[in-house]
Length: 527
Image 1: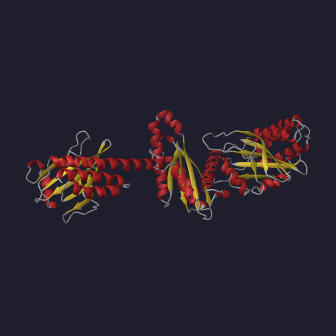
Image 2: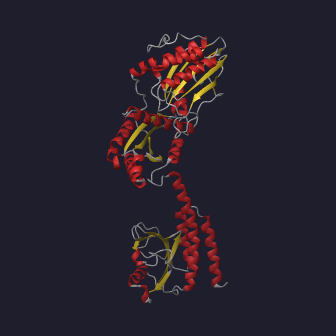
Image 3: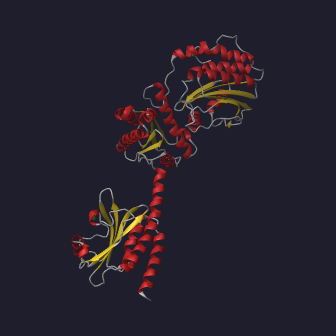
């Protein structure tokens, strides 16, 4: 078989083996080995260019190596200025070869050849995309003929095959990195947070301690409008530095940009005081941000799946909503809080009694004789007066599941994924003990972090912050329930529970109190 045929077969074999590689390190190691065969050399190397540092860094050496050469060197680098055909644009990059007798080779290359114990060498650029990515180098001892234009043709074909596989792996790795990283800041992204949370909550029986700190940039829109988006991007990168520093003080922490001006820290194994302190420290450190930007932050912590979420996805969603609610309560109250709602202002209670009671009672008096319709008027009227974001009326027959008959309200925060309750939705009373008790003629109040655990889970899963509910029996078979929920934009609702209980009772029995007269129990005590 002629030498040319053998070299074509070797090239074809190299192409097939390159295509089988899935990792870059594996590919480069294989490339160094196959370069010996394809270039008929005594030693070979693969190197990468570090354009930003002006260096050529050797990754692998194979073959007859000098005593100072290492197969996998950590710090074998050369100045790119010694390789002018590599340190250039793709258009002008070219193969170079020479030997000790060639004066055009240059003294620095002569010195390198002598140090390697070689007589001739060849340097082949590896072009990936629009840049010179690296180099394949090969050398021969004096026992072989020097490299020739024929070797150049083989070497360039070899590098073309190798570059195609490098491109495939680099593009795959880049896409995978982009899938979990934010391009602007270098932090993780929402997918990275979701993925980590779901892995942490994958085992329902493993009670991992997980804390989430959420923050966003106050004033970013103003900065973008007045100074341009480049200035806004600079602020976002400054925020990423703050989160990176915070993450660095707690091993295993993941810092991420969720999108827009929203950022997140995901921590494991920290206490509530530590989570609170990290949130406070981020807000404090944000005073150094450019152009007057500041951070608002909130946090949540859970041991195991929050509220008994049934799946890892539900658990991940719930803990993020817990932190989100905390953050927006912070904005509303103007001070740092954890997951506890602010206490209502007594003036708001008085104002509600004076402003809204007549309206609700008037609606109730004019409502049709049907209990469901009357309860709908109560729910809609009271929700409007106290700032609830949604309401629904449910019915339970013979102690079976509570089924939603009518509802109202809307998602007031379209930037959040909210599962609204709709007509026909049903809730198993065995899973909601507070609801079951209220249907017998009572009521309950819960927030996303306080009250009945099942109700906390419901709030976290549906994107609400707070709920008040009151029920009453119509007869031995039928019981009714009215529920009002608040989001982060709502004022506290708990103070309105006594009024709701009285109005529900009036609506179910089918009579209203005289207009302008407060029902019994509306003095802040339980009805």
